[in-house]
Length: 219
Length: 191
Image: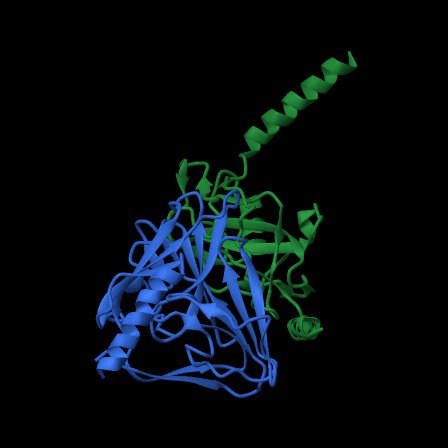
């Protein structure tokens, strides 16, 4: 138990150091994660793929992102279609919905209203126990169910299928970096590293839902 | 070589499926900010379903809006003054299909719901109701669409839309006055 706590501490600490995108300020079971998104200069909108890294009281957008910049939208990709809740000052979230750890989403910041950088803070509890993150056939936006950064397979324990693709979105260039997995070869060109609170598009090329499982504890 | 094989694989898998353009029907977020105003009151169209908005489209470059078609989903009300913000992207496939990722010509039409539940009904009622309920449409603008068959291309927002006014049909007396003025100008030119 103590070892696991140390591993988590190390992982969260490393997450804060290794990436400029996410900084973790707490290693307790309850804490918060700040995610900093640099605005794309000269563009009307800045996109990033994020994830809710912690369990809030109900994981509704109105709870986990209560006051994002005016005009922010979130693109959820569920059951093969987009669902796009939006936030307007004075109105709140239109299409408020729960976003649980393990599910990723695009956030679209209105550059006319969003500060540079925009820092989004997620508050909640570190998910623990036997965690199962279903990765459906074809495309989905996924993330680690625990607030841990690292290599997608080596550290975060996602076992890919032959031919699967992972689309990591770079908020600086506003474009994808695509990684492909070939059996017997591994990830091309390199195994992708995922930051705390970062989501990604995953293309499961099998007809079955994959189960991305973790057993995790901070005690 | 392995990289090329992987890229080819990615390309083939993402290109499979029938591609259809998608647009986020939302005039307030994701970089869009184009409110709709009632020219009579000078106020933004009120929240609720007393006013309706609908998305019309055609192939990019079309300038005659009489050829535009509406999306299949029903017109929507306003979630805050001047703004309709929908969470479900519209697919441009109602008889006319715009390919995913392609440019489309878009026009937003809005009207007082007292005129009717659809644009066609409302427009006919508007023409026969001088100085009555208001109606209007946006300029035609070009919008790059998202791709329903490739979700890595997200539905586009109405980022190129400009706000517009809803107005009543001018009363016959106003039209007659305008026609009289025009005739006077033409008569003077001929002299």
